[in-house]
Image 1: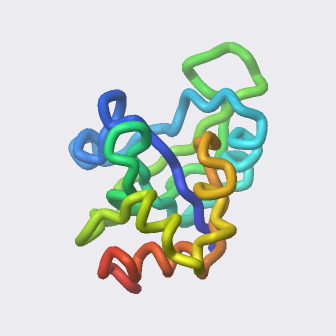
Image 2: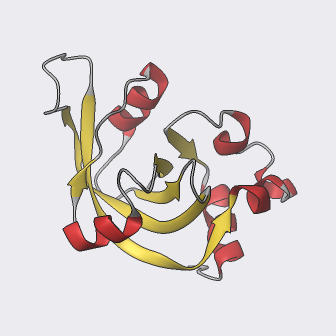
Length: 137
């Protein structure tokens, strides 16, 4: 299993809306590195759901339920989406400042490349964030 962090601005698509919808395709990615990360996602992979710009915090865990396919919002074949569904809401959100202050996350993509919208995580990074939220699995 692989682990990821996916970002959404809450005014565009919040965790609360995601829970109401029960699944969505993850679209709008127009960065090649983020697109390549979407292509690497496999069925069952887990993703930290991060509210960017407003809040700047991990709020939940999503699960990949369909691997990459053509982004239906564009005819440009370079762009792909994956389908995700809510897995669980975090007991406590984990803010960007908390993650930056934890030495175990000093190499995390969110800290090193904060503008990237789909980031691969190590299992240790994923578990550290869950531990920080009191959601350790």
